[in-house]
Image (cartoon, rainbow, N blue to C red; front, top):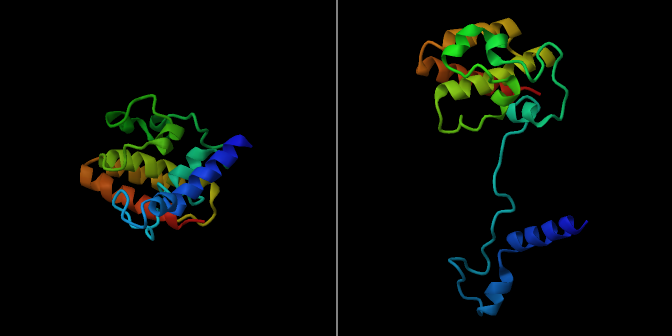
Length: 162
């Protein structure tokens, strides 16, 4: 209960925009802000729809029995993935990756394709079948540009899914 109150007070101060400091300074600009400027009530936004990698890594829904979260990506997608990814990389770790932001196209590919595969097994009407996803991943490994374009297509499908 004490942490909740502390959070509410801290959030209130952030949203309030520091009006106490502005009032104390007589309405002048404080730390580059005028009294009527407000700070956002959030610090970071992530897409957390029901089909995104972030959703699958959160544990809010059980994973399909077909692909346990501790399965290695090389066993699920094929041994060719060992050319690009470490042997111990699991599907759960692939969905939790943060190196896809500004990182290589292959990081984006493994993250988005892992979520797409989970969606194919658990979301009726998902635009890709499991075998199609596996085939497309193997085809995309040939170059950075192929990986980037396929990762983007998987990302769009993941974000559009319900």
